[in-house]
Image 1 (spheres, rainbow, N blue to C red):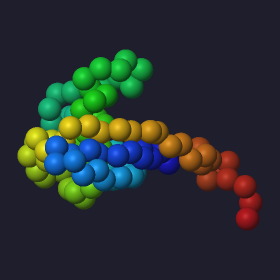
Image 2 (cartoon, rainbow, N blue to C red):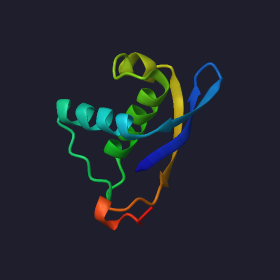
Image 3 (spheres, rainbow, N blue to C red):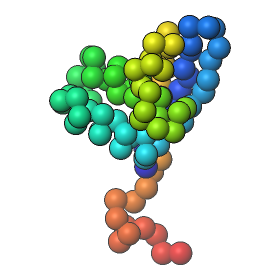
Amino acid sequence: MNRIRGTVTYADGRSEEYVAGFRALIAWENYARRNGIVHDPTAPGPNVYTMTAVLAHYAVAGTEEGFATWLDTVVDVEAEPEAEAVPPSLRAAPDG
C-alpha cells in the first residue's frame, strides 16, 4: 500500500497535516477520469500538482465534493510518498 503524507497550508495561515491512502488514490483516479486527465507519474507537471491537491483534499475532507472551493483557500500543498512493503500476492506472503 502506498500512502502520501503532507501538509496543507491555507491562505489564513493555518496548516493541516494529512495522510492520503487507498480511498484518496481512488478519488484521484475518478477525478482524473472525469476531467480527461492522463496521469504520467514519470513526468512532473500540472497533472502531478493536481493529483497532489486532490489527494490532500480527499484526505482532509473525506469526500470529493467541494474540491474547487477548498482549493481557493489553499496556498500550498506539500507531499511525501510513503511506501510500505507488501507482498505482491498472498502466495508471496510469509507463513504465519
